[in-house]
Image 1: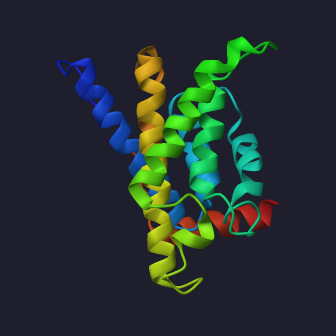
Image 2: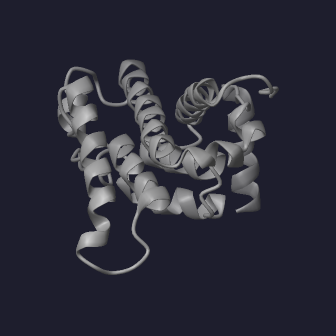
Length: 189
């Protein structure tokens, strides 16, 4: 991607839009679930340091509202995990974790304001579980959470823009190519 001559603020906007789109694409093509997509895309695109398979594993228990229980939305949970990855504290101590707590609360509050709730059961109560409408609704939550989480991270660490994996973000998988990846993974697995 050619970004020469584009200001830092515009690069951040482009980056946030690409992160949102990539997370939605991974969800829509059924490669990753909500929390996995949010954490994985942010980790990979901003070079969070986790091996890609580790990011997926860390997010896998939070899908569908914590293991399918319908509690906290997985997209929101994945966003909080990504905030911890990039902004969390490195050492013990009561006072040095304030920034991440405030930022996590800000993500929570913005999510609740946008969607009216943070509970998966409440967010999806008007759509049939497993339906296309359900899937589309959750894809929107996933993309939104990834984008807003990226925005919060970049506000606090704008230098991460220069570490962006643009080629990863520019990928868009079709349903067919995603299916082939799943088949290949099953054969290798």
